[in-house]
Image (cartoon, rainbow, N blue to C red; front, side, top):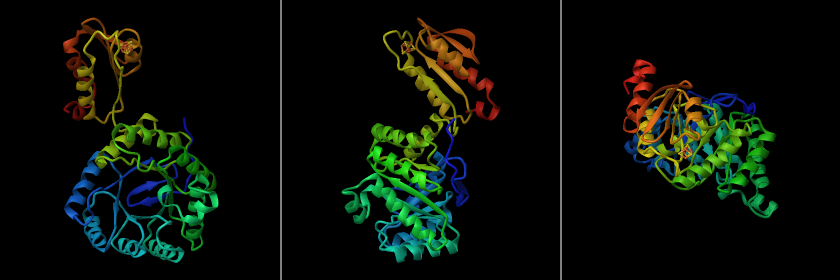
Length: 358
Ligand code: SF4
C-alpha cells in the first residue's frame, strides 16, 4: 500500500484537499467563459461525470463579470484561473471564487502577487501557485541554462516563500511540464521541501489514447510515490473525458473506487467465443453501476478460469460455450450467445435493488 505524504489540509469550497483526504478530481471548462450558459452547461456535465472542482479561465474583465454569475449557479467549487492581470484575480475573489490559480511567472511582479494573496486571505480561500514549463521565469532559465526541474522547483519555492512572508499558508502547488520525466523530477524535489498539498498533472498531454497514457504515466508515477493530493488530466478532448480518465487512474491504483472493475482478455488465436461483443455488452452494463465489484470476461481456458475465479463474477470461454463463475465457484455452463445475458442477470440478482434496476 502506498504511503501518501502528509500534507496540510485546506478546503476548496466543500472539498478537502491534502491531509490524507481522498485525492480530488479537477477539470477545466473549455468554453468561452463570457458565454455563461455554455460554461455552466459544461460545469454541470463535469459534475455529472464526477468532477469535484472545476477551473474556469478568466482572460478579461467581461469573463470576470460572467464568472460572478457562473459562480452563483455552479454545483461545483470553482477555481478562477488568472494569467497576466492580477486585477482579474482581485475581481474573481470578490465574486466568490473558491480558489485562485495564478502563474507566478506572468502575474506581473511580487507586489501584485502579494496583493492577490492578501485579498485571498481576507476571503479565506486558497491560492494555487501553478508553475508551468511553458512560462518559467527567465531568471531560472538563465541560471540553469534552460528549462529544468531545478528551475521549476526553485520558482515554486520562491513563490511559496513570498506568500509565507505575509503569513499566507493556504497554498496548493503545482509544477507541470509536458516532458514527463521533468515533471516527475520537479514534483519529487518539491515534495521533499514542502508539505503543502500538491496538484499534479501532465500539462498539454494531447488527444485520445496518447493523452490518456501520458497522463496515467505521469500522474500514476507520482501517486505511487505518495505524492499528489488533487489531479487534473489535461486532454485535447471534452472535459468529461478528463474526469473519466482521472477516475480510471485513481481506481486502477487503488486510491478510490467509482464503480466496477472489468477485467477482460485481449483475445488471441486461442479465443473460441466471440469475446468483443460480449465484453462490450458487459462493459455497457457495468458503466451504470457504482458497486465495488470485479468482473472478469475471458476468452479461453488458459487464464480464463483463474481470472474468473479471482473476480466476484466471471466468464471463461470454451468452444461455443462459456463457464459462469461467482465468488470463485462455477455456477454453470452457458451457450456463448447467452453469456452476456446470463452474466448480467447474475450480477443484477446479487446487487442492491436500486442498482439491479439499471
Ligand atoms: Fe488468449 Fe485465452 Fe489469454 Fe484470452 S485468456 S488472451 S483467449 S490465451
